Length: 198
Ligand code: ITT
Image 1 (tube, rainbow, N blue to C red):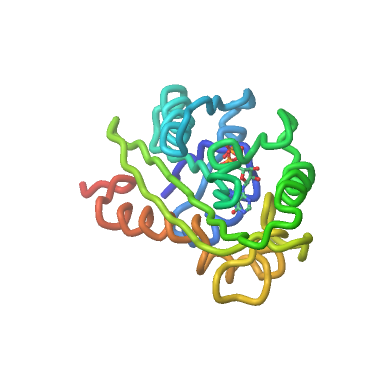
Image 2: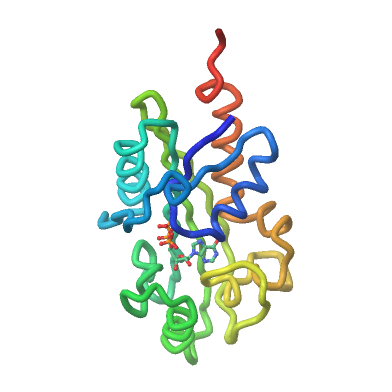
């Protein structure tokens, strides 16, 4: 069973492939020969996930999903949110993004934040939406080398360490993406979309 993941982010592919197990194999747009940027110009995570999934579905015509993720920080009015990838500029530079967040939160004691992940699946021209979130806080310095993006500065609620200090299996158990993918998997198993009955 194969499914296209409309992403250019290999870290996401690695996390999601672990969650899907051996029964479902992810193919990336790059593996089908698509190497252009996938547009994401929406104003919400759902709009972006839909746009990315549609863009690839229209070109490849096979079951496809996309993930759009945002880090929402209360003290910054929900920023960077849907602009998380380019918070410090078009370079999508995670180090620069984290530096900007830490600078903006300098001296701020209320540091509550959450990751939200929206997945849109398109199969047989129908669209399905799944969402996961995890609450936590932004710590005052980077810690850990696992994971990607904002993981070194995000500590999930109830845990002493950041996502970047956890093995990927543990992050997947509690993360925004882990929760969204759990629903995706349950749906795929039930709906038999990828493997219709004869
Ligand atoms: P695609 O759109 O190609 O899937 P992207 O990296 O642009 O990849 P997003 O727009 O969803 O993906 O990402 C928003 C930003 O949030 C980006 O800077 C990511 O590095 C970061 N991010 C996404 N998921 C994350 C996670 O699980 N942990 C930490 N940071 C994450």
